[in-house]
Length: 112
Image (cartoon, rainbow, N blue to C red; front, side, top):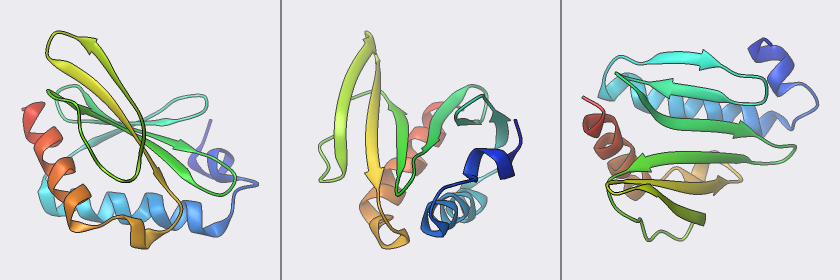
């Protein structure tokens, strides 16, 4: 699976959201990108984020050590004692606000 295949038949906004997330992460620190069959894992030492492109939005799974309350969260699941998967739904680049950027940085540092 390639990036092009993963974003084929998706709105252009979906790819723009992904690129903006990568731009934000470049300011935070180095990451590894791992392509999966239907998603992209973002890693430092381990995965801290998952990008799930949909036709008109991105579901972004952010790993944290606590449950997150945020207007863009569609689901939050405790997967172990100190790990939560928090699913954000982004419809546009404008959804990537300062609150989300702070949470992304927190998750990145958690995986240090």
